[in-house]
Image (cartoon, rainbow, N blue to C red; front, side, top):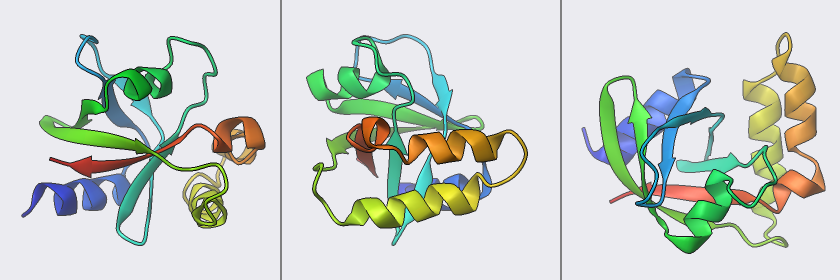
Length: 123
């Protein structure tokens, strides 16, 4: 199975995905990710300078960890005005719609987080 296809399948069926942003980080952070139209997206919950999102702005290469499988990726910011954000919002609300997740799903579709959206592709 191709790396991108593997990632898409894994992310569709798991809530937390390990991410390592840039080449200077040593540890994986578990975050929410969604798939829409066979593309992988994530939004930064943390808005600080040392967030994974800002690390990718400085160095677009990183890794995703799916169980014990580590795959090299490249991250691309999604433009603020891109109409795909509405579809990404829906993907978050559909995937993370139960229990405590529902509260955070409503938060991650707000403007502060929408403008910190990344797309990921296996390399």
